Length: 383
Image (cartoon, rainbow, N blue to C red; front, side):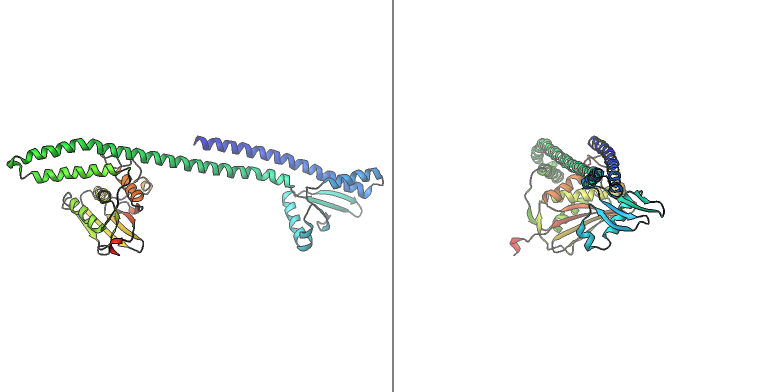
């Protein structure tokens, strides 16, 4: 903003100064035209050779300002200076058009009265010289250059900011994975100790599931910021596994539907743990939106180049003025959470899988649809 204000101040000052200079040049040019007209009067009326020679010199010195001569009724006499002769001869209305331009530029001509009775006079209309045109055009060119400079600077700053933000969130994710590693390892040790007591047998499978879950979360966070290994997988099977896990943790008033008839046999390159994480985040957001009562529908289709997956809920929807904020780091409407789920999900899909994740549709009180687009590649093992 400071840069913008400074640039606008400089451009405004330049425009005002350019207008001042243009006005000064315009006044000087009118004086020159008046001197040129007076020279024509001298050539027509004077008998003094010295005066005629001086007037002729003044007339020939004007090589920049275009002038057209008309009679007292504004009919062009055919006399003109500093206009393109080839255009005058080849275009019938060229002089009329130039005269019209000159009248718009300088409505008041310079009049040379030849005689009073009957009234006979020549009118001289003139236009802008090249110098004056350049002076008027200069601030526009400068404004364009400054605007281009500001645009490039803003783009560079935004790119740098995004890069720094991405690095920050990647570092936080890796640090989270590191911090989780120690207590999870400790829990694995305690699980082995618990296995030695037969009385603990009924609860051991559930404890083992939770520990494996923590290991999976740690692995996911650890992969953020580094290029994960992509594997040939069937997306519908990955989605089904996530849904089976999530359905066990939802209430009875929530219905999750998955329509995968069109993609059951489709393979594509995925990072299984990260892709699963993205889907968990989308399902969790949908669950928060429907607040324990509603429908979550997952539909998937494929075209020649892409796999399209939509996650739609019947929840509270997103206000239009917040649609651009949902993927912003730190943005959340929940009392708990860092607001990183959708941010990292977008990073996983767009940077690691070369796809897209965006809000396809949302209406307050009706629901929201998130769309994932994944590029389809040919699996060499199936060829």
